[in-house]
Image (tube, rainbow, N blue to C red):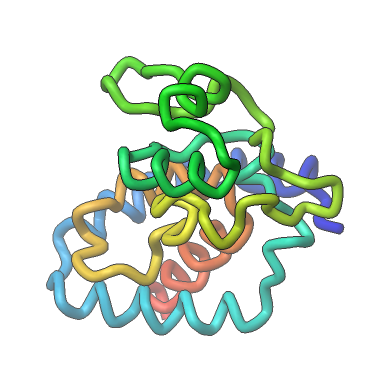
Length: 163
């Protein structure tokens, strides 16, 4: 299992450096940035087992879009309105998010109980392999405080730029 306390300390210590680095990335050639992020994402996730950590599921909530709500409600054999009432709230951005953390669908073994039907945001997390990654650099920085793999991706890319 991941040492999440150590991760939190390391992530918070690296945050100011990562923040400055992310700011500098915004001035880079955008196509090159996608390639570097995607390649580093693949390398890091070849060595990462999310089930060792599940910190994202323990500490944050994805955004639930209507198709996500309908798909999960159908899998749970409940009405979408019941799913919303039981599990979700509307946040300050007017998005549906979980009422609290950890995720109610996180099993004791760190496996997702609705994995095949999980929200799109969970499917794509931590978003470090997407196209136009420059559009979500602030989210990537935020995710360095949540996801050890994201922290490692940013660390590796940072080391490439100083090499």
